[in-house]
Image (tube, rainbow, N blue to C red; front, side, top):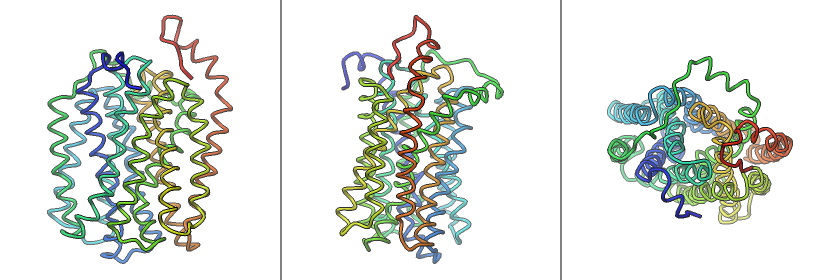
Length: 407
């Protein structure tokens, strides 16, 4: 899938730097999820409070992606990424040094972690602008595989919390972030061709384009499902199957790794067969997996297998959506990435919060999981509603001299 022409195109050090920055930013973005069991014990939280706690960073990251997208097109992705990383490292260091003493302060840290979640709107344009249209799916799939950082949090945060206390994990997290920052400063470069800065009015003009809203809808399901589950699964496996936080973290990491490494596969398949065809299949797979997962499995290993299947489908869908976006909005990719990423985060906020609400009110996660399965089917229906129009109009908008459109 990684052809010789792909290896010759673009800038490999920047692609790696974008991946590493994205990966470790996502690690801390969802940190409250793997630490959720320990935090809940410290402050005696109920299921709804736990769900909201892990959902707050997701929502904050979603909203801040728009800000990051605008900054990317004004000062460049590299400078924007440097600013974001410094804010997160400083905030975590202060939180660790001062300490968190109540639920409200935990939520404030959740808002800070949203800055790390906004890295999505920086890392993807940083990589995208180096690569031609025929390699967008794979390049953004590789950069976007930084989603796997959520697995690092699930693997190590509960274990470190068990040995050093969950508060100290906040301080320890700054160490890998600092390493990633150095790599980013040394190796990442902005592409030679950067779009001219636009006014805020011109940015918002993108929202007048129906295609932008369709892409936002599609990503709210694929990425929303991925990040919502990534944030919630440690609590889910602990609550539903009585697994210890460490083992629940291992289960979560397996699901996240499956979804993360399916992302470049989804991007590569979209490059070859078209984003529309790829998304149609993965929406149906995700809906099936989430619907089955909504029924309590006989044992945690069956649940693990089903949720891994759903996460792989959602991860592949993330890659496929971002094979489509640069083809339609190459000159506005910074702000479009921010807007599409924002709705992806909102979808994740909805899923994480709805899982906590469902557990609190019904004693089961079924309503939250099944409801999101229905949303995946609705997204599939919407995609097939507009695909004919896209195939007609996108070629016209690209112009006769542009590279072929692959839908």
